Length: 214
Image 1 (cartoon, helix red, strand yellow):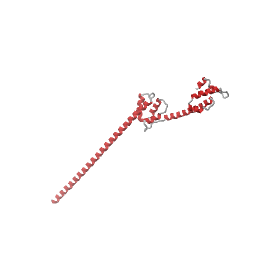
Image 2 (spheres, rainbow, N blue to C red):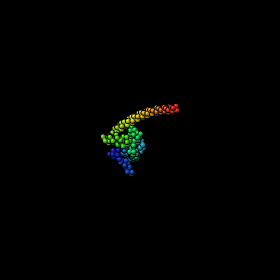
Image 3 (cartoon, rainbow, N blue to C red):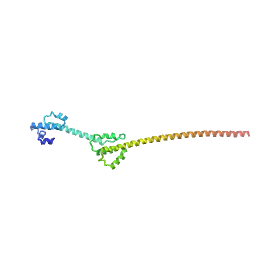
Image 4 (spheres, one colour):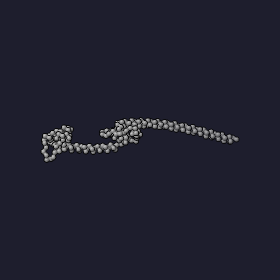
């Protein structure tokens, strides 16, 4: 806008010295140029300004302050982004949802994603870094690979839990049968022992009777 107004000979209405009398026609033309270039909501805020110089000063203050706020916010967001780490209980979808709204290149997002995932993904990350260019990989592609690997880990964990439960059930059944067998064997030995002891008593009794009879 500054260049256009300078070409039209209107910039002197913006930066005129304080003691110079402004050309009213140029002032109105400059105001018209500015009004055509700014949004309607901003136009309503500066419409009461009488000179193009006052309007320009108001806009400059407004946008410089907004620019500073934007830079401060960007710094905060960048710091938060650098400190992001995926928790063990988080899913890939939940974690990458925090990346939405960040206006960063795919390469930076992919690198951050690879650095932030837990150790269980390191094998896949190492493989992708070895066979692919992480800096040129689309972010959605990296997320897709990690999600597929996550699903495989869940499936394997589920199968392992089922196998462990089956082995535990079989082990308990085997232990129960073994305990039952020991109880039956012990009872048999007990009865055999009583019979033997009874037999010995009878034998001794007969021997003693024979002795007295003789």
